[in-house]
Every structure is written in structure tokens, then in C-alpha cells.
Image (cartoon, rainbow, N blue to C red):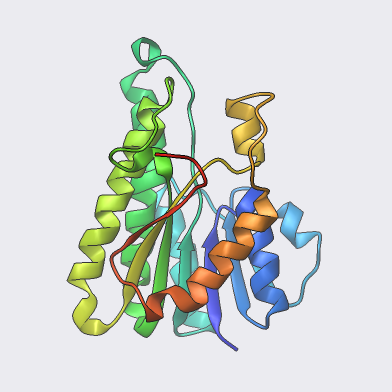
Length: 226
């Protein structure tokens, strides 16, 4: 059995992803502040870990688990995210820091701590947003969110270069609108063209196959133009 770690699994895409991997025979470590939704499903291959990714000390729980139970990680999906929809003039430094803490800093720290457990053929998939891609459509109110997702894209490219000799692959998926609870909270009433389950299926397939063809790439997963 292969081992996969997924962050942000209490709802939305991460919730669906954990189930897809488990049902395909993977051992899943599901990370979220609220572990109850997945834990209540009682799926044998899923281990839930309640963790606040904004605290570096909490991330140590993940490496402790891997050291004790797995020894190695085949797939890491950094899916946890935070979105603030607020006019630019109302955004504070604290807003930016809270968004970057989850969308960039925690991804860097979790990945850094897991590097010793990644091996030749391991695949790290970072979940970004189409709003973080240069030249894409931008939306008012997302200055903190989209800029953090742009930073995540650049981080992914750098890590792919730094670890290519060890044959650890890093790719980033820049997602368009997906019908999740986070989207509904930020944009009440907006209906996205893709469901959380549909996007989870795409990410699942990319996580297990994409690194055979791509490394250090930004893959835009959006039906919008540009």
C-alpha cells in the first residue's frame, strides 16, 4: 500500500480526495483542524490528525506519525487554504499574514519537515488558484488570497528545481471556481461550474500520474478564459 498525506480534509475537495485515495487502496493521513467529518466515516485506510497548520510546532505531529507508522510518503497534497474576500482598502497586515500563513508558510513548513520521508518517485501537489496565475482573470476583494496563491506557484517551481536530482516531483494545480463551502462563504449565492467531487477526481488522477510527465509545472484547471 502506498502512503498519501492530504491537508485541508474537513470539507470540500480535501474531504473527497481522502475518500478517493482510501477506496483505491492508499493509506491516507488526513490533516485538518476539524477531524470529525472524516473520522465519523470510519474508513479503515484513513487516519485523521487534528492539526493547526498555522503553528509550526503542530506540524511535528505529522512527522511523528510518519516516523512511527510509515517511514516514507509517496504523495503529499497541500490542499488546505484560507480565503478572505475584502476590499483592498480594508485589508490589514494581519489579514495578509493569516492568509499567507496557511496558503504559503504552512505549505513550506509541512513540506520541509516531510522532505526526509519523500523518495525517488514521490509527488508533491500544491493546490493554488487560477487567480494566482499571471494574465488570468482577477476579482476584486481577493488581493490577499490571489497574491498568496501566486507565491505558492513560485515556491513550487523553486522546489522542483531544488529537488530534481533526488527525483522528487513538485507540481502546482491552479484551480478555477469549485463549488465548496469556502467559495460559498466568500461569494454567497455564486454557483461554480465544477463540484468538489469532480475536482477531487481530477486531482487524484494527476497526483498519481502527473509526475510521470511533468515537474515544476503550473497546470491550469479552469474552464474560464483567459
